[in-house]
Length: 239
Image 1: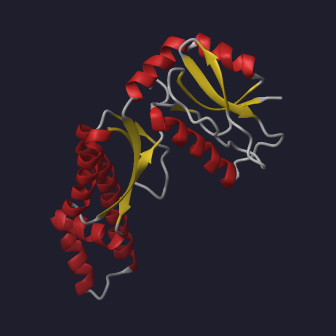
Image 2 (image 1 turned 90 degrees about the vertical axis):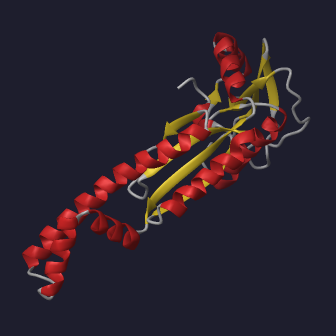
Image 3 (image 1 turned 180 degrees about the vertical axis):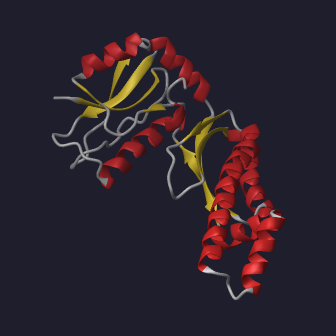
């Protein structure tokens, strides 16, 4: 039977004696050791699909394991042919995995997503551009302006908002990075102007979250969502 992999930890780490993994009923989690490392594994279900139940079970295994020390979390769906293959991979990358575990000790991931309050950002771009304000005022004085006037104004506003999105994404990264030990850019999405993951020391967590709140207070057109602490999925490799 194939082996499902949840994450990698130090062999010296005290892990829970029993952890329920993915599957229905839940499959018991065991360890495969190579040198100073262990992989947290279970049998792989016959059909492996990203069901909510199994996604949550995967994350729960990682969270329970990292209660006593750092874990390199694997993304959902990692399957090896068998335990022996897992052990061979641990041996092959032994020193690199240990380096990553050292780098993640005492640190968690926070994901920050941001977008614009549409009404507030429109006010902000108008306030920052005298020519755009003048065109807006002229259109209003003309009862809204002609169809062409509206199209031109709409295009100019869209360009200004797009430029503001790029500037605000850079602003968020610049403001939060000093409180962190690393940053990764997540996949771009039409719903977000920024999707960033930060590696945060646990003793700086309060400072980091205070900086997130300060961003919104100082820039009311920004809607910012911080999620964490999370297992450091974005930092499991050497980047």
